[in-house]
Image (cartoon, rainbow over all chains, first blue to last red; front, side, top):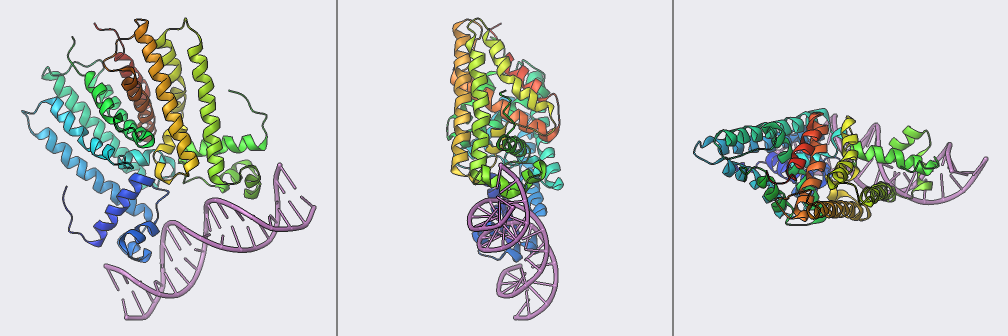
Length: 195
Length: 195
DNA sequence: GTCTATACAAAGATAGAC
DNA sequence: GTCTATCTTTGTATAGAC
């Protein structure tokens, strides 16, 4: 959201982020970034000492963007919990509109055991944060009488988060544009008060 | 299931499969296999001309194992549809018991745009097959009065498949052993007849 | 079918000039 | 801050002996 002051460092982060989202960590290289920005590989090393450091910075920025958005969504006490969930899902729908993008951390999850430790811990923290945020919103919905859950909030949160991440990955592979909308509909159907 | 006649080729497939499940496609090398089996890299090339060909063979064998299992599950007309779903989920639970394994195709999904075409099409076919099989079982459950679905079978199938794949990926990252059981419970809760 | 040897390209990274 | 040049390691792959 914050349009960064277009320094080289942030342009490198932009390209690296897109590359990881589409190709993963192991399959992207400094050369890819060099080609995209028209600078030399050595110049990238000036801004980010190593590939691991660059990837960690990409995840940090990505996670921070989400953290700010999540705080913003939950800030309005008069908003319905269902509306909050809809807002949470909006970025996933954005990704699903592109033919080749998934959640940055969802892409990284497939190659976890090949990731540098600094990247791995950040992906883990991202997953934890999102699941906890979702659990809080679900709990709030129950307390306000908006939701009736078939499982405890923490469980439902896990399912919703995993389903969204999985849906994006499957959608990109099968190219089926309605995948995410279908998943979102099925998830929300599970939150409705008993008939 | 078919305990192969332990030829070198099948041992290579075994190791490659495990490596892809844990590290992904881009991050595994012929050297890794060479180290694991105590043979030279050149010997692997004798059995599989290229890395792309090897990976395609790995996915083929993996998918064939599942195809046979799926056919077996659906073969018994007296089995409950819920029992069929439980059997479908069993391999996911097996993976979730290990600290570092996810579905082979789930791991590959994260780096789709970096995969050779032959591998990509096979992963896509795997996803399609599983979602179609799940949709048929759900449809059967509706017809037999076992399930009441909040969405059409194809949609529910997508959600279940995506949720299972996503749950495995998230579980491996967060290390939370109950993730898959929680997701399975939440998914099944969604299939119950109206209260 | 497995080996040694080697080719060739790409990767991540550093040194030092400008 | 970006460049050229270079180093080192690794990766995929092939040729040909055993």
